[in-house]
Image (tube, rainbow, N blue to C red; front, side, top):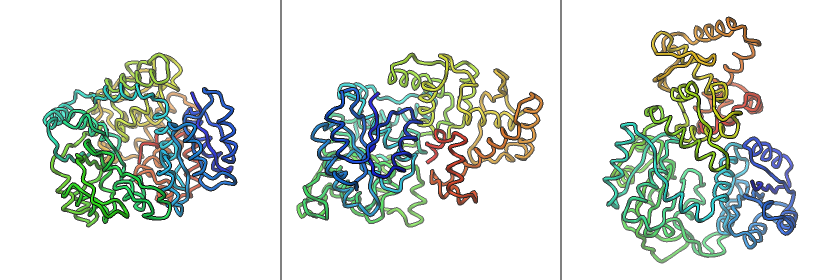
Length: 503
């Protein structure tokens, strides 16, 4: 596995990224300045070359943008992530112009940084032939009635150019649906271009969508084609459209109405033939009522709406998805695919999966790397899965079919709604804690106080992070604890993996 290279003159930034990436099973190599990177590239064997380069923009000697240009000359396919302060948006534009994979604004959330590096890493390890084969094989899995209805809808739209709005919770696979719509459409031979409108600051988003002319603003040293031009003749996927800035919504509406636009700083109209597919996890009707989203744009996008069911609504699909993701992870890592024992499969088939299919895919990758044997038992599952299953079994005691295997009492098919409190599930939450303590004491478990305290703190932090959509500082404020405290607790409790999808 080729390493991730990190270059930053700030030791604390290097340390944080190194530790976080190593927890993800990714190798790292760090540098304090750009000149050292260039020297290492010249001397490194092919197997030691980086898979991703993460570089600060302001460093002594060769700065990040100069390094970007020099490295791209040597390794044009290497994904490079540029780190920059919010005040360096002009530099960020230059970074995109120079071919950067993405830019990372400081200060950054570690989970966001790791997710970005992982996306860049996954791109770097795929050859063009593999990418083409993977794209040809990209299909959604599911036998549940809700998924079958979704498949039928995609089929009915296969000969259409109509605009589609995809809705669903985070992690349900909205981009996968968009790719399927493109693949089975008359535009299948054209490009599929995706952009997350929530991930790019307003100052950059306009240029990203519509492009810019040379000299349009500071740092615009050459003309740049935007995503609309790149998608000409194909499909443009606008993810998280509900977060698009209000003034840009007006420009988007005009493009959808007229089929033409102007680059930033341009004077000539550019006409394109693009099918737009938009997606959001938000309630757009509510956003319209609150004045955050244009009603006319909403109606322009909402020609055909496809809703993707949450994974908890199609738990019967969990076993087939698990087998698929375990095989995919094994193929990626070059190892034999692992299998789940019946008891472990029952636990996962009853898990709530707040992060939906994405969380299940990450869990299968975790099992491929971390589970000690070829057959995964209940004890090999991550703690948050085992803990939720135990709480669910207590809540449904007497109301559900349960199974006792490998020392775990689990619900075979619980139907817990995320909005229900433990009291609503049949008993005050304090009674459930008491029952859990009694079970541990009865089994002569050691350190019962520490076990329950850790579970209680994990539950509080997970709920707060989910409520604030991954904003750790806001979660700490909601809980009434300090930022350093919540960071330390997340590390001590081993919650990084489970919290990554709660955004």
